[in-house]
Image 1 (cartoon, one colour):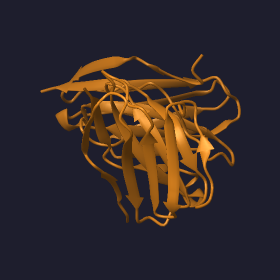
Image 2 (image 1 turned 60 degrees about the horizontal axis):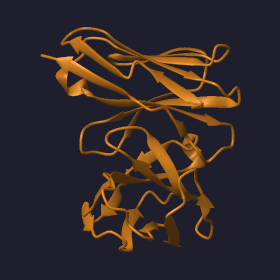
Image 3 (image 1 turned 30 degrees about the vertical axis):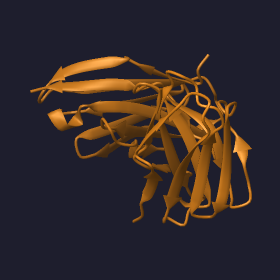
Length: 111
Length: 113
């Protein structure tokens, strides 16, 4: 079983709509979480990190972490066609050099 | 800021051939990684190197060798390329200063004929 599971596998939203991506981990040692975004033909880039319970907002992007339920989510409001990409959730334990990546959510924003 | 450079961008090889992919970073990061990504799917860790003289196997190390020549460079060798193998190989680096957040290069796309 994958330690980091993402849902949905793919998601389509209209331009200007809200996109919601979810991630659940199965390892209570995970303390640090990231959302990465990968546009076609490029390497992944870190979009947001979240290390504490609650919400973290950066512009149109809001991440939410609940360590008790091992759940992290990403919400994109006012979605733009340029947000169309593959989104990964990643998690790490304290002091670990490894990030554990989920299998990704393919987001398509339709003009 | 910094950058990770991967060469070549596209690599075409023959079945059974030994192929080498190179990665350079100028972040001055201690830790470097190699991942394989199949068809826009998830990332699977092949090798990583915590410091300049270290080498650690990931979950997908069979069929690959790695070499950390110096702090800024990390190479990956496909020891015997498999026919119909097509994947993107991603190099990354990280530092404990940012909780080991990883910075990725643009990738090398491998095709085996």
